[in-house]
Image 1 (spheres, helix red, strand yellow):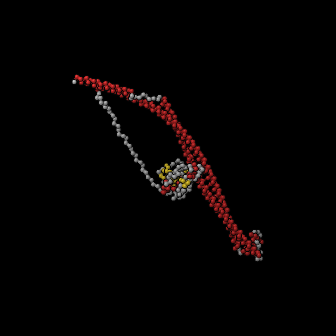
Image 2 (spheres, one colour):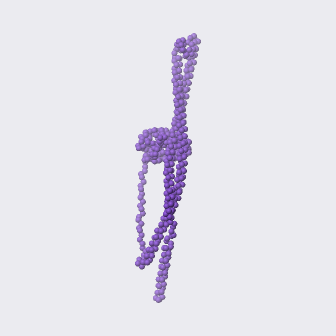
Image 3 (cartoon, helix red, strand yellow):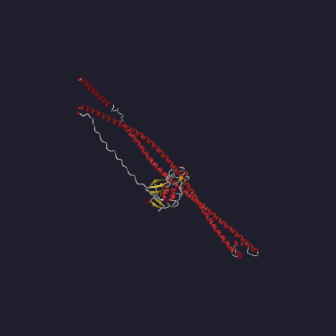
Length: 458
């Protein structure tokens, strides 16, 4: 039995050795043939430099167009201010024209009343003359030598004067005094009639001047709108040019980034190949000195540190108080801008302006314009005119450094006022800014702001 078992143990040891050799060979083939892929493309330094130069050139072009667009947007903002100014001037002209029309209408009524009074006085005098003529005729028929009424009225010599004296005795003085009183009354009423007609002429001249001013304001507004449209078209072209160059910039950046990515992948491949070479060398050294090692293959590993802590930042405090005037204005947030809209009772339908407001359909909207919102907000304090220029002088003016919650802020320049808003405090204001927008809260803009705020309360 023992003789037969020994060959079996030798055979088993030989089989194990052959298996270990085959496994080692397989590991060797896997390490050299599979671990390292073929090298990726490696762009040249000149290719990388050219791609970066192209991207830089496109970036510079975008920068130039950005500057041009910023300047154009600045011009457009100035033109927008000009349009707003012209719209407010048209608003003023409309208010002035309505006032002139009202004044002219009253002057016509006064002139008609004065003319009727003068005509009535003339009629009374004529009746008195007829009565006096009848009295004289009766006296003549009774044997008086007094003569006719014409002798009395047209006396030019002593004989006529004697006839005048006889007439005075005949009528007893009272009838003649009454006639003189009516003549004086007719003179006074004729003077009033003349004054009323003169006042009517002045009122009609003012009405004509107001109508001309309204026409000029409408023409100026139309010109400003055309200039704004032209600038907006230029801005649109600049924006399109900028977008096109930005696309070219993105393409150049993508190309440069792609080449840089290829270079990076090639460098990663070189580094990986170097690590594989080092690993093969280490394995070969371990294989050569395996009899001196423990064969466990233990390796050290780093312990990753704890995850970074998340920092929570507390939000700032919130809360505010609101007065009655501001509450009325804040209650209109979100209502549409409507040129000419708003009164002391609330929002109203806008009106046509023949320009910007019409294009936005303001005459179909129920809302406020800037001065209309102020009329509504301060309705419980005082009545304001529907023109921001008149509202600027409607209360106490204080320097901007002293402005406080509830004051009105105005915007304009040498050409006049074109916008008004209500200061809320904390650098905020509520306004009805322009056609196409809504009543909203904005940060106070200091470009074009007037040097004084207007205070109606306190």
